[in-house]
Length: 429
Ligand code: PSV
Ligand code: MN
Image (tube, rainbow, N blue to C red; front, top):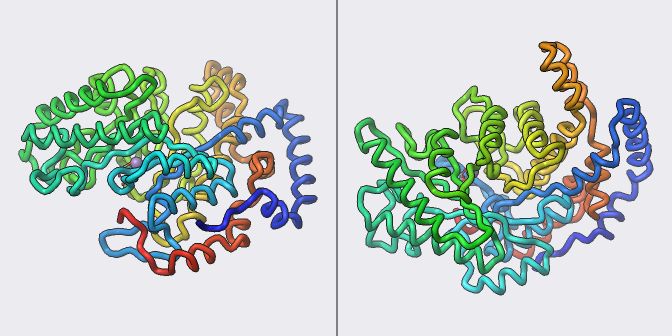
């Protein structure tokens, strides 16, 4: 097992910057006090925040043009958990992991659950995979080439349902309480399939899966406008996702992946709509420039991230509502753990900024048709350097003020490279 990064080691590694942090936090506290903001309440809210790390993101990603592994990557689901534990040690905000089946298909779920508990981790939403053929799903006698739940052949639809039921049962054994269903189903050519019949089959399949959910479980429908289907996707947009969630049943919710929108989509408004109708269930956080780029959260458009978090805080009545939050990125050139640490930090920063918004003043400006005033209120929050708050929240969780710096200085990657070998491909790719 890879070396652990303990809170004691973190304090040791960060001793040099302690005094500067205290001074920075005091200065920010004074500034916020003058603005009538309770800095302690913001720190507490940021410290309470956690976002799941997906098991597939601790390995180097890639494109169809190639993949360049960095060395020391996990060879098994157990080692993926070890890496998420290292990430959580420095951020204090990745307390859960999301598995993707069959990329992860533990032979002994009870043992994996114990391993997670020993690492202080729990299992977040399970992800099913009916976008690839695999011996454990299609088994060689059927294929998902022309779809899964939307397939014209009932035997293929049944196989997709079987796999999803299996993923729920595995999740029960691991202590998870949600399944996310993202389907590649769609068409590549006009006329290839009937839009309506495809939708109806998917709705029926999800309703059957919903019937298999244990008490307290949530079924999440994740939409995406294109890829791998290039002409039409069955669950193409938030409206379709909402229709499917409604058709599936009362415990179905919509999941918003920030990269799954056509350019120019007002994602924060989508969030508001889904929240309004009680069907907002969770997020896959990433950022993008062109499409589903899976770039680091907040790296291209941090203001959009802030506005999304603001909608969430409004929906939660001043605090983040208890939805399913996960990072869904592809780390092609950065070390995966470093990228995940930066993504988590970006989320904590955006959350702190959203919590600084004077929502009463904003409502007054809106009702008074004061567009300039409303803009000032948002900018006052967004332009505040909240990093001392975020660092303090992490410290209070026994994590690092500077997660990336500590990760580097801890020697974790060198240790995993020595143990696992450099240049090893991560599983599941
Ligand atoms: C699809 O693009 C997606 O966002 C879904 O969540 C998948 O399950 C995940 O990426 C990993 O491929
Ligand atoms: Mn996703």
